[in-house]
Each structure stands twice: as structure tokens, then as C-alpha cells.
Image 1: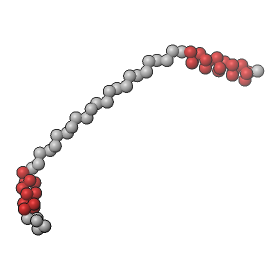
Image 2 (image 1 turned 180 degrees about the vertical axis):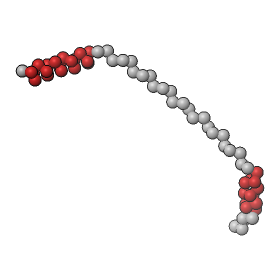
Image 3 (image 1 turned 90 degrees about the vertical axis):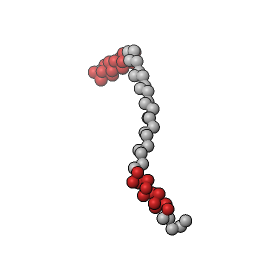
Image 4 (image 1 turned 135 degrees about the horizontal axis):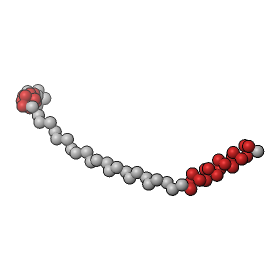
Length: 60
């Protein structure tokens, strides 16, 4: 009989839990829009090396 009474108590307790009002759901946080990263400025030395390499291109 103890098992049956325990099961009845658990069922009653479960019903009480289901009848409790649920808390308001947390509103979804807005996703921040990623800002476009500015392109790093090309160093003058690198630009010169690229132009020299382009001028000395043997295929052209």
C-alpha cells in the first residue's frame, strides 16, 4: 500500500507543478550587426616592391 500511496502523492505533486504559472520567457537578445573592418593601409615599401616586381615580370 505504501508504494501505491507514494505514486498517488507523486501524481498529485506533478499535477500541482504543471498547474503553477510558468515564468515569462527571457526575451531574445538582439544580435549585434558586425561593423565592416577598415582595410589596413598598404605600406609604401610593399607597394614599391609590388610595382617593381610587376615591371620586371618576364612573362609580359
